[in-house]
Image (cartoon, rainbow, N blue to C red; front, side, top):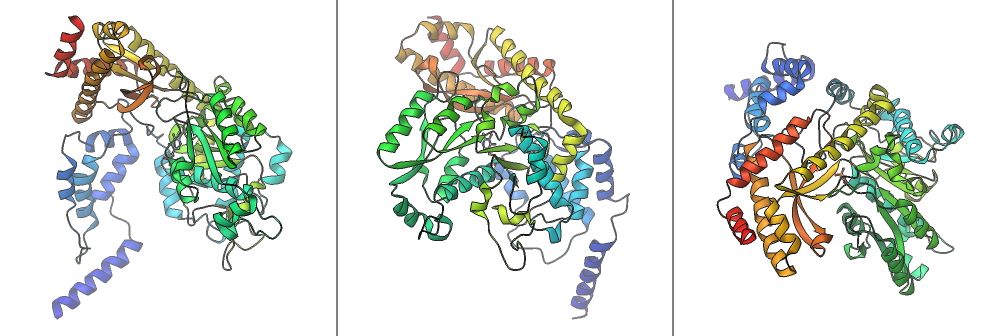
Length: 544
Ligand SMILES: *Cc1c(COP(=O)(O)O)cnc(C)c1O
């Protein structure tokens, strides 16, 4: 009994401590904090160890299904985290990690994030965020202006208006896309006479009232999977997302888009939204947004642009023209956590018409009262962190021209890498970069030459073997841990539109040097030569 009492008292004391006294500077936590703040890249490089430890092994490291009955010392627990978790994390900020959209962060993000977490503001309402609410509206205004380029008086009128919103901040592109389509859906199926609108009465009554046999979302076959999730939760079903074929440059075929619109109209299926992609996830291409806007206008339907990844290109005066037509969209999704060097959890959607969000307005008694400036009355999420502060700070510290330099650099580096691949005998460039994303594969010259004169069946056989070789190289490279490129399967027109497995590269880290790019190709050649079955077989066929 006495032992139990002592334990309870100790627990109580340590609980008091964790809310009051910080860890001593010479403790494990203190040392980590110092190391991180002095040299984050060094810290990550030192503590993340590249191993090929399989996930099933790592699962055992955390193997404990009951919540501990005994508290731990912070330092002991930190050592556990460093040893088991940090060491086996992915070094996303490494300059040779060029496989995904997640890249390095500027050093100032770390102390600012600490401040943000320390303040622990909740952006759902003014009562828990005060100054953060106008700050977030300001950021939405800046991003709105980046897209739509309205004039000063427009922003003076709408940016801080209680019953309007220029956009919504959210955790990422997925929620931004859902929000955009939610707004589109509720505006399309709005209250009308006796009908109280879809938000109140649901989809079935809405379709009956308006006489539609269904709804559809039209997007190119390169559209992001979050659109299917959106269709699912908005009640119109994944099958209602119609994939429109793309041309050889991975851009939506507008003739086919128009035809599909006509076909659906004849069947009384209303197009809820035409979605343009500005920077496809797999190839980084941008749809012909101006032409899509024309079609949306012709069929009186909503036009949304998913610029989650490519939207930041608008910060470059040199390249923003690639996204021409985006200013005609009803809504635009942009992820600040992709090409704006902000940590994850920073997505947003902006609306051309500040009144559009009225269709998703929600109120409650204790917060979000009518006429309040609470951001939560126009967002899908409830409690939300003050991420807008990190975007606000980055826009000020880096500034528009600073972002332009970063964006231009990435695009130009991607072009350099494409040329390097093109000039290399052992590689085949599959998609040339429009922004800073490209795809390619390992295929020595003899194989490429054979493919160019082979018939379809012969091509299929070679591509089947190359598929295995590409996968082999990509997996080995990841396991080696020196560098990382990702892989995906895309339809390639030179192979009759069949799906080909390719390496995918996103060049966003400013520290990725030309030398690193050469090294990555050299490593891939080396790994290919380690393939004892696929490569020899390929060479046998092609040299015969
Ligand atoms: C990344 C991405 C998304 C999804 O964004 P999350 O932030 O991962 O939710 C949607 N569309 C495109 C084009 C993207 O690149």
